[in-house]
Length: 342
Image 1 (tube, rainbow, N blue to C red):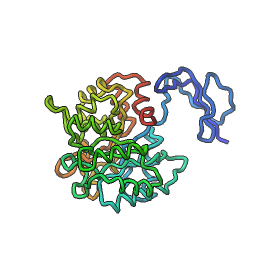
Image 2 (cartoon, rainbow, N blue to C red):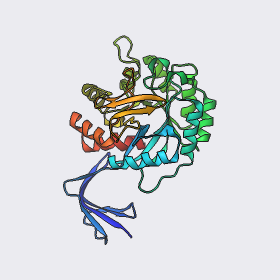
Image 3 (spheres, rainbow, N blue to C red):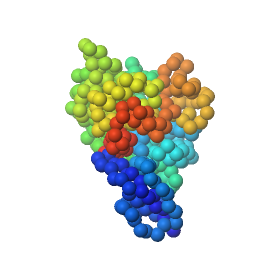
Image 4 (cartoon, rainbow, N blue to C red):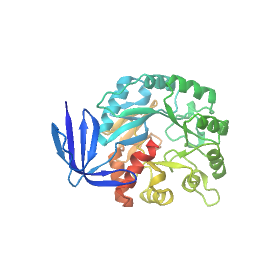
């Protein structure tokens, strides 16, 4: 039986940390945490001057290692789940995108029957991003597949997914939007405002109906203006909203990241990658929902220049956040796992 001890490590949680601790792991499960543990082990790892974090949770990721959720195959999900462990991600929401209804349903059905192996990050469920979004804030989402929010269609999708839809991105200001937000949030699914051209007042109304999150802050949402604060202003000002943040310094300027940290605090920021299939593989041209994405050192872009996801890793996101804000280690845990877990 494999038993591993990590000794003298600094354990960090979101609300506290502990120095010089031992952690004993048996057959892949933590069985003991404490000082100077005496369990017999088959391997010891010296953790002196090192930090041990909970596994990262990525609530918004489309793909990695040249596969994508929308490939709708179990092989693709296995490949992605295995690749994410290398960057510290131990669980994630497989994220769909605006596409033909049949393509979305195929992805949902694949996830419904998917089972992880022990060496993979766990698929916690699905984040449905689109097709219930604004044509004014499409980004890399194909405009031709955008449709009005439909609670009947959502319930069909939830059934097809095996009740694994945990989060859905929606533009609340579009036709049927507010009714959709109200109904879906009552069913225990996180409603995240994104790809939205809503006004400040419309976001506030959506929050009153149950919306609690903002999808990739700053990106594809009505920007801040001093006479109309828009989705960005509402996301920063309304305490009820937690914001996703892509800290690759491509999707958001360094000072915009600092602004979010100062305005929202670590308790209301969720670090995500929004990565697409080109993460972890060489630069080049890749497919995203039938569109060609050009991936270079400047990021992932469609031919029209629109950003098309990222190739960011979660460990890099944490390093960037620490370097930029000098946040505490406990705050890093909050932003990389605890907030998402809640």
